[in-house]
Image (cartoon, rainbow, N blue to C red; front, top):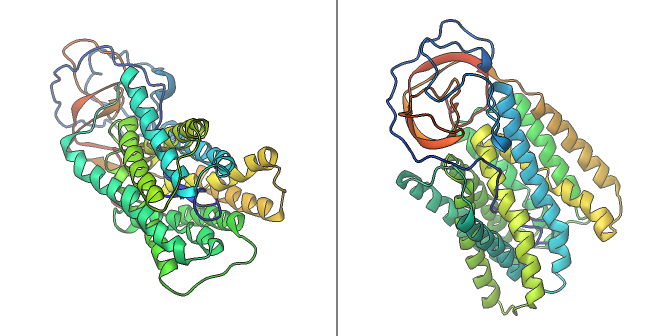
Amino acid sequence: MSQGWVESSKRGRGDRAVAARGHVLRTLPKVAQRSRGPIKITSTPSTAADVSLTQPLAAGHSGGPLNHGLLTCLTGSENILLGILYALASAALFGASAPFAKILLGNVSPWLLAGLLYLGSGVGLALTRLVWRGAEAGLAKADLPWLAAAIFAGGICGPVLLMFGLAVTPASATALLLNLESVLTLGIAWIVFKEYVDLRLGIGATAIVLGAIVLSWPGEVTFSFGWGPVLIAGACLAWAIDNNLTRKVSAADPSQIAMLKGLVAGAVNTTIAFAAGAQLPQPMTIAAAGVVGFLGYGISLSLFILALRHVGTARTGAYYSLAPFIGAAISIPLLGEAVTLAFFAGGALMAIGLWLHLTERHGHEHAHELMEHDHLHVHDEHHQHDHAEPVTEPHSHRHRHGRLVHKHVHYPDLHHRHTH
């Protein structure tokens, strides 16, 4: 994930860091459960809420609508809406951090500020996890290779490639090249990980990215034909790989993932900064950077991971691309920046892309194969298993899904990663 508006004309993109979320705390330990056989559908429903099962609901589940705070158990299009809200909230927090980071740039070097923002997210999340962890499932052993690869790509390769690229590339060109992250994120999700992307989604993502380009257009652009643009494009590729690999572990606790990412990226960026001769700023500047990093990078990244869980990489990346517009909108009253034609043109393009995404309806008959995993869930049509005693919801434990065939509106979430 990218560096944020800190490097390169203060208009880049930043790694999202850690989120505190309002999920209900688990009040009971994990209990043994009995796996079920294949689940039959008595009819072909039109929506997720219409699924009819031949087996009774799991023990401890009332069968009615469940309210669980921020994680209200939703199905079908409502569950999709929750994922969209997570993505938009992530973009809003990161976008809002940009003008505040710009204010801090007067007192600290860009590279060191990037490191302090990342460290603020990692340390802030670590402290939060000491007092509250929620009911999310922890990282499993099978998750570690994916997470390590994501951190290596986004927390190490990305910043280093950007550093060398910035040294030989004009800031105006860098600001535009950094928009490649969204394009590459969608491309990798579609081509490599086979995430479903139709024409409507592609047009919407293109409109959002074009809006970001218009917003970041510096007026006079100077491109150098050398290794600089290649290195910056490589940094965007590293962050796009990070985004897609993070989706592979998005069933685990987002705060744990974001904490590790923030600590590693913070260590890398501060090391680069001190190696380049940066001086440690005043304690108040460090504290302010920590707060901005915790909110704008930490909480934002946790929400980003939740969005990956609900709507997949391509859609989450597209929604996240709205961050530059949010940052520009806040900069107008906060920093006294001028309202320009580019602001309205970029906003209009982003609005078109957002509308195309929000009105997407993808539904067809599909099969859920046998699967066993661990994540935060409630007992809905996709989670029909027994417990030895009544449990609170939501909760997390390792559980098994039987084969299920049905039809409803869905996005590529944890349970809908089938091919088309």
